[in-house]
Image (cartoon, rainbow, N blue to C red; front, side, top):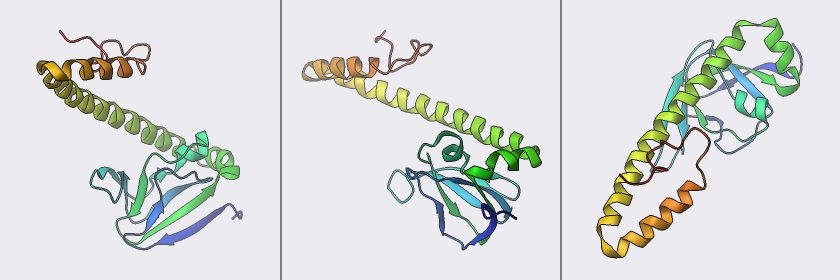
Length: 166
């Protein structure tokens, strides 16, 4: 095996990837399980999934060069194959089934993020509507709505937080 593809063991509860840090490798689980979290270790910690044998993670940094959007923690003792960014393309070409797995991971992340944005939008709308009922909060709510409108992307104009109050 190449220097940039090798096996690595992590112990139960060990952090494999930290949210917000950039990595130049991805991992494929050979045995064991890993949990993916947003805001791990905080009061807002949110479990987004548990991965087991054959599943991949860490592809976000490899594909985008951006920080990891989640923290990955070993649920049990886990053995992973570490694939360095410089070996990623050859790994995919030699293991085409992994391409579908990586695409599924990314699609699931998009679905999860959409659901979270939807929940957050509803909660924020409730807060803004409550603020607007109070005379002193009306101006603040309007200001917040204006600031949120700056983040309005094409196709999101019907989104709860970006639309005007009915």
